[in-house]
Length: 171
Image (tube, rainbow, N blue to C red; front, side):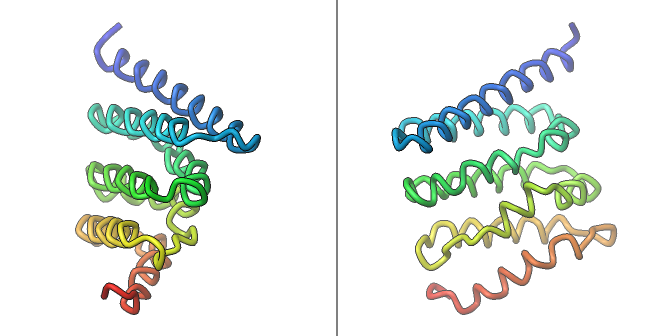
């Protein structure tokens, strides 16, 4: 097996591990047996998956699996029960955006359902200043990667959301 195939196989294993960790978290959350340890394990599994995927830039696999959909699954649990860890989801989002190599890939990312679900979520900005900071930094990263081929209409709602933060208590 060549190196590229070995890397993809490892990423596929990490993806299945992340899905299993999220499934365990969802099950324990639904039965009121959720612990912060289980939530952190899911975050850790997602982090490993994202880091490995972008280290080897397996962007086609990322798109196929829509990793943002995984972040969307974890978001409400962290928001409701472990808000002190919520910033880590935004950190992972920042990692994805920062490591997206070109405008074409960025446009593909903008059209993922999970991307829109994640960023159009009600983020309760008034309750978590770290989330506000990450959200603004993510948008800065996006803006810096835009060019004439970028599909602005795909991120218009995000830009408007950032502009609404002008009235946020820290601004």
